[in-house]
Length: 346
Image: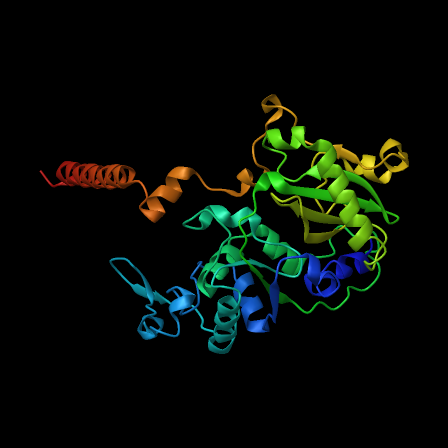
């Protein structure tokens, strides 16, 4: 995998080529001060004065001025942590979100914050405001990798890194059923393999419609993708809807930086059985509930109890936590009283 291949898989490079066959999207340049904010390792303070629904921005602007400082205090000092504001960028983002129907799926040049959906109140990547986008981005290792190490696994490390103009990509929100997503591997402009995207789950319809799915993806590739992309080796994701129509979702470099899902990169690059078969691409999917696996993004999550406490979803857990804290404080005060009595002069 070369650095040039990574550059060619940026959203703003491939979207104009395949615009008719993918989800409507808008691309905004990412200002340098926003990039610095996203990479700041300090306290996670979410910026943006858009905590209300974006569809109400033109009818109710009173909430937009209600940004409050976050206070962290103790017995000795009080520190005010204030999130930076980006008024011009915020305005452009809100305008774009409204133009896309008020709900969007955010990503950067290559990655979406799929590893951070645990932090969202709805456990979803659906966003209606810039503050929701910032919360996901600042919690995502995938986003940090885009911003700091986009060429980490390239074979031509000795060559200078291409200049990257970072962009915020806003995609119109669409309710995609995970069982309809597939990852396709192309080598030398030939579709060699197709993998179920959400391989951690068993979807009965895939087993029943194996031939139809494989044929639909192959036909979509032949008609719209093959020879139209800038590279001859690449990976693309598609979605097959309930009507059988195939949509392009994303394009990725052909290399280990991209998850090979139910294949191994050794299989895909060795030129062996998969690359040489003539009858069509190899198609792999989870074919029984026995092979269901945990989500690979689970390792990025915090314990569920932490989420419940932070959001107040489970009132009983919050009550138990407060009781435990009060009990510990009382025990600590009692221990201090005993020590004072023991140390008192006789």
